[in-house]
Image (spheres, rainbow, N blue to C red):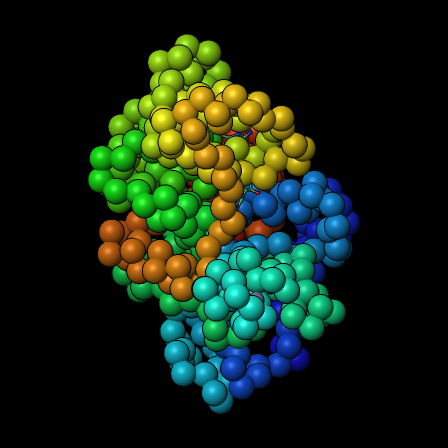
Length: 347
Ligand code: NAP
Ligand code: ZN
Ligand code: ZN
């Protein structure tokens, strides 16, 4: 067993505090990673507050993990001690179903093993995430991180990066496409950076007027204040693709009005309650409403390589572990610029 220090939520909606746990011993196909940094995703907050149901406690959140390989199993080919490595939202999957064979492990027919608040594929060993000093993972689910990237700022690529990269690729984002990004938080700011790196003309759609200058600095060519109804009229029928990252319930119909003929809107945010969709929001304009879940391991590596090539990382605020509960409070108020990252040295 490998001992690790961690931070855990003891019960639903309780503040996180210090916790100790054991990881499995390093098996022949495993790598042991000394975690250097872990990003703080809004999913961590939904899960700690048990907003989606079925949360299991104590819970160690965190699925934007980067660090250095400390030890590798005898059969490991792709990593050696000292290498940089990352782990995102999954630590395993069945590897043989149709989805896994298509490199879409996030849609594994058996259910992927998610990095925390989940189980390993034996369906009994609980998984604990990256708010911790060390983690053991199968080599097949570890990612390579370029030493060219700032390591702390690369951590959020493991969830916010791949979650926004995957739909941009799936909907073939190309130079000149008009992409609207809804919600300027962790996912939203990565969507702006990645879509503009792909050559799209990006408009930021935000409830926060104070974020306009940042949106433009991140690469947005336009800005729409969504608390002003005139914005929805001004931008009606404009976008090839809208990426919606809002974490709270909101009216999708309003946003669908800004999608062009045969364009698409993709939901990434997971509000705790459903919202009605009027059929007419889709019928007029033969529009598509879709959703997207993180990305497969192969595509996550492709995204990390794309980010190394285009020098894309997250804008982060590095925090010590003792500030995690405060950081959650700030994220709930939309006060994040644009990803909190935990520094494992402070654990
Ligand atoms: P975040 O950093 O907290 O950003 C969310 C942003 O949404 C806020 O900054 C705010 O932007 C906007 N917002 C929040 N509350 C709002 C409200 N009531 N009305 C309108 N806008 C609001 O969160 P995140 O880490 O980017 O995560 C966003 C969502 O994506 C969460 O639900 C998370 O669970 C989900 N997620 C999904 C996947 C996936 O695979 N699909 C992966 C990761 C995360 P403005 O101030 O600009 O309005
Ligand atoms: Zn996440
Ligand atoms: Zn599978």
